[in-house]
Length: 128
Image (cartoon, rainbow, N blue to C red; front, side, top):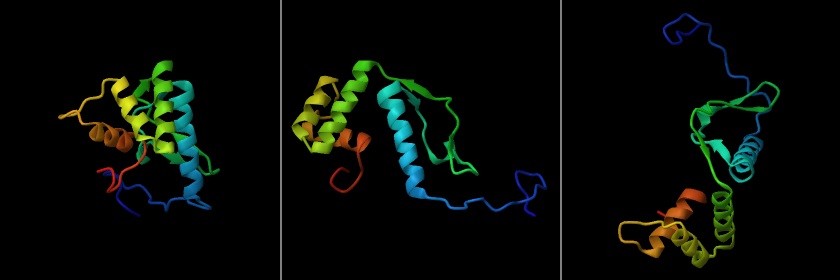
């Protein structure tokens, strides 16, 4: 037995069974992608503490206390960003940053390009 949150609750090992991290990540990406790009309403605080691995293998999403909404034009802009990132079309990405008036301290195109890359795609030595 372990002491849990000040009570004398029985400790149980997590039930991981045939846990498949790849499947879980694919599911989470598909759900959040659908929320962002199709519904336009999404969880503004998606982190590991806000999903549950259920006994049947399903993924449960919780804590939608911070919900954000995107207009149709914002969703279209986001789609164009993802296409530019996939195609590595940095000219288009810079144009999209200008389209929304994105600014940085010195307003350098390279900075806006890296900001969008970091926010929407990846982090790495080439980005940060």
